[in-house]
Length: 241
Image (cartoon, rainbow, N blue to C red; front, side):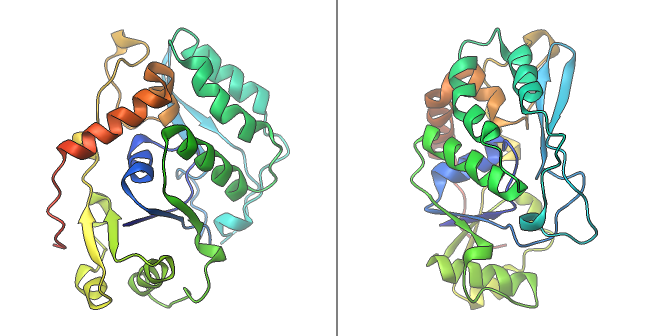
């Protein structure tokens, strides 16, 4: 089973579930960079509420994610300090930061390289066995239509099941994928987002944050166990609809 997603920055738990659910995760890095998307920013919880952590990038019209350069003004130390300030009281804060701080501090020039490094380290911390693939490095996947491209990515990875989020229902052409012998399995993660002992509990639980939020609260082993438990309890139909 394969999950295909644009390489996210400090991804949310829904992406991390795919790392433990799938045998392949393809990072869609040769599509257009989305300003205001999740490729260079994500949300954390602080004493003052939700906040963004953002990697500044050099903007250019129509640029692809793989061609998006990190701006010279990226303050890594400032970002790590902000994370420590937000989660310093959490029991696993240092363990969580030990996984993401090295990729942040490596000095990556390109956003896709930074995100791939982060995803790789997070996958290792979660005990993921998924093969991480870059669509730009795959041969013979170029296609005119979105569905045809997805089919070719699946074929290049040797996969026949596509793990898809409910948000793709509006545009995913499941009958066309079925013609390529690809079955769509809807993961419906948003509606079953797990709860955990989140920081700053008086603010109430906030779903959809970066995985760093959960990792600081319950540790990487705890996040992995939580995701595996959610997968075991979930019974997708496995039918394209």
